Length: 238
Image (tube, rainbow, N blue to C red):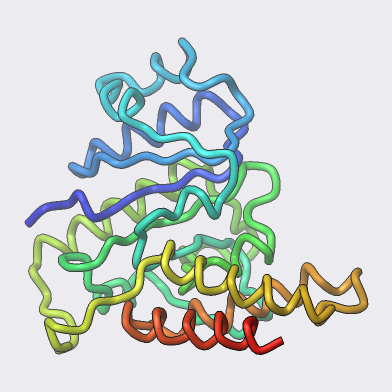
């Protein structure tokens, strides 16, 4: 079974040592896709390469993006890691729940926040699920590379057991993150034209909630195209 469908996204990582250690953890469990979003250190650098030890190939193949939306590409499911429970209408899962994810047929990405502040609610709003690693309730903080290696080992183990996912027609193609985001952007453009987002100070939270609605719906590619056509038609009617 190929493990090329799995990506690990580091959002605004701050320490070179952690980036190198994450690359090493990814290779430990036979994964190969590392993605960085707006890293603080120069990438790559000597310290990153040194701490990656035998995983320099992971560093060399890694992709770097300026923002989270650009990094999602054709990802089908985004799972955001968080040390705290979010008071948001989003599906919260644990390590055991990962057995229900279709790692064989879908492109999955795990999103990790910066060492200092983790992920904001805005960044979480791009995810289909949030994942919390069970830790001491009085001390939940985990090192970035430690979090990644726990998830990498768990996913690797699940994939090797060849658990059959829930039945779904092979003719139904899940919409990629890129397709869904294009649809959302089209809808937002039309809403901007009718001055929907007001007052202006509430626009960021409205956009968060907007993304949450669509990303948790598990839309098919066909459904996404239909909604895009609807939003485009509504714009023309004005």
